[in-house]
Picture 1: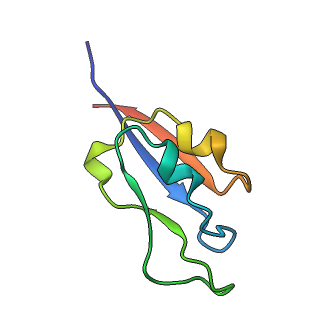
Picture 2 (picture 1 turned 120 degrees about the horizontal axis):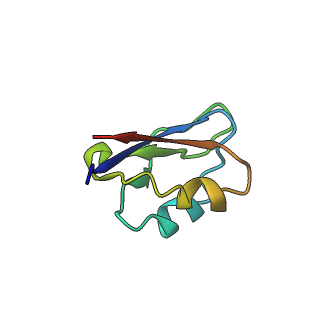
Length: 74
């Protein structure tokens, strides 16, 4: 059985750093950046890219639809 690998892309301009995605990530892939976007928010990013399983929990709970999830068979 092929292992599924995931990746996310965060729209850092729209992200307001609410942290809901990080709280719902089962593999603790997402963290809030120390840097801020143009609006002054610490945006979400993939802190542990190799751990992403592509479950899409982050994208489903994001209130502003800032996260796109990709899945690839590894």
